[in-house]
Length: 234
Image (spheres, rainbow, N blue to C red):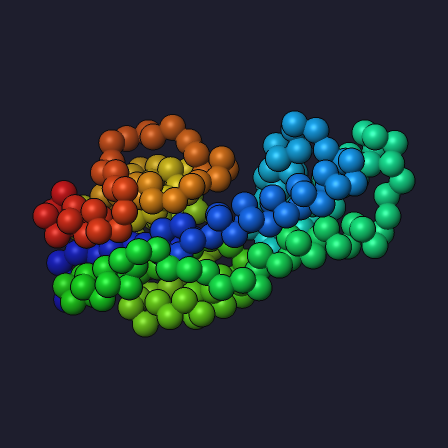
């Protein structure tokens, strides 16, 4: 018989810092563009827009989306300022984007202690979106895989994703919690399936993850607050 409650965790910016690594690479890219005179006040937004369009075009979070967005942004500004593109420069800019995937991800405060404590009385699941090989490598490096009964990597999270999780693992929605930082991917679709949700606002978040809350949920500023909400039953 399954234990009383199940907790589903998101991974990126819920258990490990991820967006800040992309921000660091973004600022490095912007500095390089400024040194070439290829910039304006919209540079950050142009790069972000290309990145999001790549996600939509490719149907998910592929590793090449971000480096390709840097190449596309470089080409965009070359065209805008009548600057002849240089293939070598283009490749060097893309390397900045690829570099994100070589960096170690720092754990959020209380991540490991929370998992260790909850595992004693809850079934823990990890649901993360992105390129499977990339995500599994990050999870293995983090050292957190040992705390989860199941780890599932999907291209994108939606209502069907959570419905499938409930069916495949025979979860009872009212006895299940979802903890994540994305309203779009973690909270709204899980809420729609009757799962108890905690929106974690512990890190800076990407505009792509922002959305309008479609139902009430708990909100936590850190993982310690998540533990308090779950152990007190909401």
